[in-house]
Image (tube, rainbow, N blue to C red; front, side, top):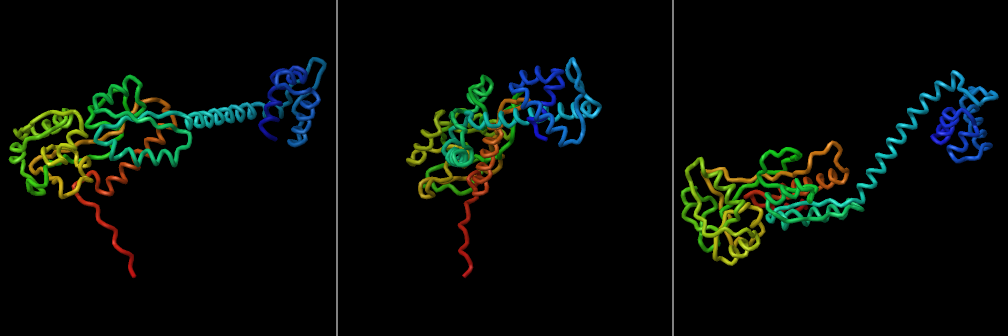
Length: 309
């Protein structure tokens, strides 16, 4: 007994005759009759009573009919589910990242998707959180990593990690590894508008202020100016974690909790596409790997110990 035989059996019962059933399932009538005869022999029961006006189910046939309908419906459900998963595998996923994360997180995410997700085309858009939120709401983005987002209706939010801000200064200034909050106000800063708003919200209850020399909404431009030894900034620690220690100094700001929360966001859907869930898992795995290596914290990555002799 197989699904095709059950489908033929149900077609005969629904049509009430072998001739009509053969036409419905596009099979020759002798072949259909043979399929039913084999099914009855396999089950050891008679399924139909033949008459001048067609066929009707026997009690055993009626019992099988109800079970066969359920089995065929379940098989169709599974087929559609697998077909949907296969369709998702060929889909495009558009991921939004902030400028501070693109160079840190994207290479690993891209390689993971390339190696593990055949058929998925990853498209990346770079923007700050307000623009990323707009992209999610308008449908231009499938998912995005947001910085300190407010609760949003219609979005599913998955926290990734919390990252501290660092005071980044040229190494020649000789600032210590920990700078008191009072000293922060005496350092002229270049800052993006988003990071300035986050830090100032954290400082407001303490009555502290920043000395912002200029607002520049380009993380790369600020990073280059700081690396040239001319300017200072307050930036998430990961942005300068790979900078040479002889060039810049990353100082922790004491007396205030200055950090950002990174959150993976997507449209809240009753049944999200399978590809979105898989890409989301890869993003989380890469973020966890980088966090374990100390990329998002002040601590340095310890070199592996040599194997025992």
